[in-house]
Length: 175
Length: 305
Image (cartoon, rainbow over all chains, first blue to last red; front, top):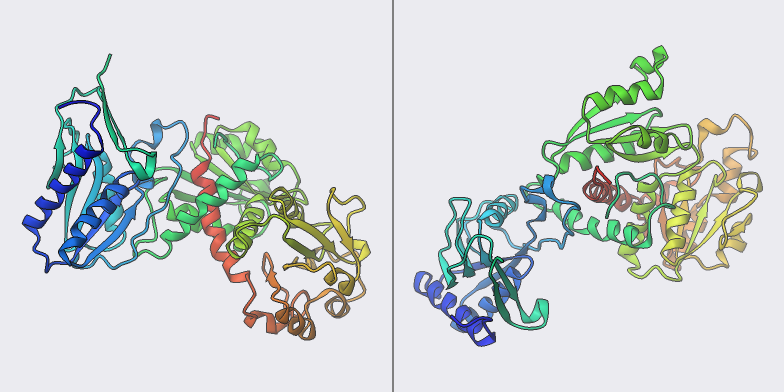
């Protein structure tokens, strides 16, 4: 894989995610895509745009997991809150949580906790643009755009048009 | 925000004020969810140290702390060893040994919370000290009016009542001025400070003050407990001269003027009964927003700074 990944690679990854989701969920099914801020919300939004071509009902929400982190003790200042927006009932809905990078799994653990405070979804699945491995929790993605083989201390930096001004994925190996 | 304590509005930077206000919005959003609680302060302990009676501020802080999952302990001053002559320092040393993370202090003596902040590693929040400051009240007032007027720059707020003895007036005036709003005071001459801060216009007559064209009237509570000295002839006369009477309410309704009050309201003194149904009253929003603002403050302070 040629780094940095460009806009085309990211668009293809989104298409792959959409294809995997379509395979599991026929267009008659209502889906709720909830993106984890920041950048997961933008991935979710793009996924929504692709899936909307199927003429299916899609709900869209965003989740800020800052208040559910497990590392407050280690932070110098608490993270700046961006707020969540889930304005539909979760009862009996199929929720697909969306994030940009799946790494330790701790963010997803926090997101599952946050989600359950909004209600009890029928089912929760996980879609990620990039899975870079090195889990510290028993969490796996249902849908993966790109799988990257990385070392634990490498940095994977995702930039997205709407959040950062350009689409790019950089891999910075640990020195 | 790199800060251990919140003691007054004066010591905050403009960026810190804006950050505390902005962060309150996501906390307010939590109140509409099925679970009105987040785990951010799980395992932290909050101690309420009130040397002066308070129902609203006390319960607002308590609800805020609980919605952040902190454990709340009330250090019940009237029934404690303080009445047996224990000094504030001894009390704080005891609390220090309990490893409390936050101390919420209300004290009749100005400056006592600041003194306590120096004695302890815990985060100290001033919940009102003497005639000095009431910073969380000021923050919730600014947050509430910002919901109506997102840009406070140039907006005019008229504060009416016992300015002289009021920590609310001091803190709330300061925050509005810092956010670019204009503030004027209206009170009997006996209840106006001799030296108002720069930029504050003083009025002693209601009609003259209204010609200044405020967008909001902020009524202060007449502190019955402080009326051992007679600052004005009678409560009835106060209502007629400085209160929002029914006739005045009708007039300000036509002009789209909002009403604020820190509570509890002395009905028939600052405000007539009809204000309770006044559609432009922000009094209930102030109470709800008080919880969100106090969550924002608890979340933003951090020991070790």
